[in-house]
Length: 204
Image 1 (cartoon, rainbow, N blue to C red):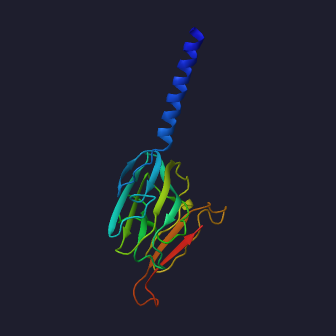
Image 2 (image 1 turned 90 degrees about the vertical axis):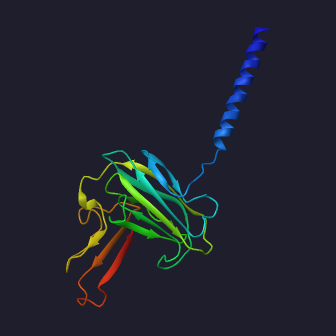
Image 3 (image 1 turned 30 degrees about the vertical axis):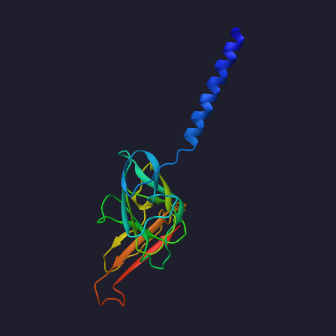
């Protein structure tokens, strides 16, 4: 009799455990239009992902990881309306919590961007869509990484000098890191060159 009771109890425990596992496996997160993400790692996605994002919307996400670390962003899926200059639907990624700092890149289309690394523990994502039909949006994972020791391992920025040069991270001592995106915004005085402003984007 005692063995039978233990068998019944074990079956009940296994059944409850299986039910809990099912509930956990099929609980789909609900992604909002923007928000503050303060944690050492997580997922950020367009509103309603994986369903198509809404037209005429503007969503801003603020990512903050613990002090002493840098934000590392890695895209898993990317599907926004395609345009050569990303005029209609796009995702801007900033190296901080304001548009006044370095923009790490503007992305659209279906080409998945490379990994992006901030120089501090904050990063901002801003997605804009127009009235036309869009796509599924984006899904990305972020985490807190260890900051690089040498500043020249980072890339990109705004250059306003009359002359200068750009180089890939770690040049010429070692190879550049895999999967990073670098954007240099170069501007000079009008009249010095045919085009007084240009953007150089380098995907590694």
